[in-house]
Amino acid sequence: MMRDMTKGAPLGHLFLYAVPLLLGNWLQLAYNAVDSIIAGRFIGQDALAAEGVAGPVMNLVILAISGLCIGAGVLMSEAFGAKRTDRLQETLATALLFGAVLCCGAAALGCVLTPWILRALAVPDAIFGITAIYLRITFLGAPFTFFYNALAAGLKSVGDSKTPLKFLAFSAVLNAVLDLILIGGLGFGIVCSAVTTVAAEAASAVLAAVYMARRVPELCPGRGQWRIRRDLLGPILRYGSVTALQQAVQPICKVLIQGQVNALGVEAIAAFNAVTRVDDFAFTPEQSIATAITTYIAQNRGAQQNERIRRGFAVGLRLELGYWLLVGCVTLAFRRPILSLFVAGEGAADVVALGSEYLGYMAVFYALPALTNGFQGFYRGMGKMTTTLIGTCMQAGLRAAAAAVLAPRVGLQGIAFACAFGWCVMLAFEVPYYFWTCKKKGL
Image (tube, rainbow, N blue to C red; front, side, top):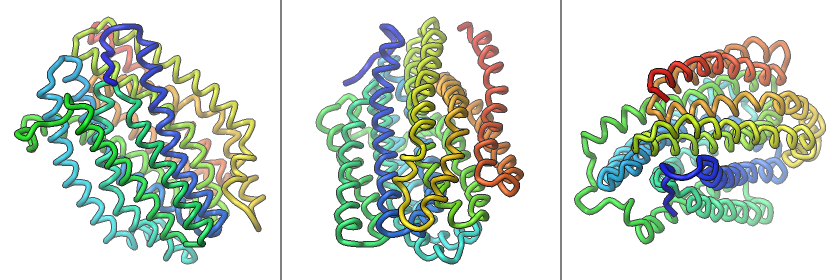
């Protein structure tokens, strides 16, 4: 169902839009976590470590490409708010065609460069072979992820965040069932784990395409609109390329940090993979609320409803902090039982103890990305993509530098302190700039 956010109370729009996104992202993370849990329990610690190494690399590719979808989504939200249906459809067509070419090229290049990537990350010889196989297969699934993200961006731009949730729910269940049958029941290895993930991503992309063609004609480009329009490609690239670069900065940072963790040994790699899954459950919903803020602000910006922008953003920040209170308490209380899901057998107790101490700090620190994500959502909605890039580069660069200093001296806990340092610096930049922006724009 389409949602016009240029009318009505901001809290209702933001909450009802963000909740399906939050649930959808939890489902996305759930089937990633299922892979890790089943890999760790039924294949072994080496498989869990291999998935942990491959994760940041794949995030680099997927988030860089989906950044184009986010940039295009802002333009589509503006077009919807301005009631320009033709521009909305032509923007989606241009984004799909251009992004498809870019995504397929990136997947092919990633498969070729896999050995070089793993050597650069100093992956231990014990898991080098299985990590290379897993990474190559997941590279091939990147185009499916792109198509789903692009189609979901179109639906979300018109205020429909519920329908993509249904597709993710189906793919999450499919992934879990296939993993349990083929790996847990039949004993297949890490290749099967990668293939089931790709199959689930393909299913969500196909479902989104069929639904849009049958149920949302307002979004579907006409026969004459299926071309790359230069006048639209320019704004898409201007918004999308900066957003894509901004999206790619975080995985680059994670890759650098993963290199520091790899030097601590297989036990630390396994623990870090497990706590990263927990971190994702905390961070991603905060990003979902930020996406709601972006869509709300972009629609009102397109409709020139300036008086609603600042009020809606304040409501969005309150939602971010409210979520932090919830997830911080849950993480602090249940971190040991949660981590126990990921490992079993010899060495499991050490992995759980190591990860539990890390999450004890992070439960408090989660307040910081709640705020940074809120401000990022505001700047994206205002079309200030360069601002989001600068803030992210500052945060990621200083975080990686701090990790390089702290990890060899403090161990895995140094990564948590490095994260907090980066987020604090990011807020020191974004908060004053927000007030300057409001003054300049008359908000």
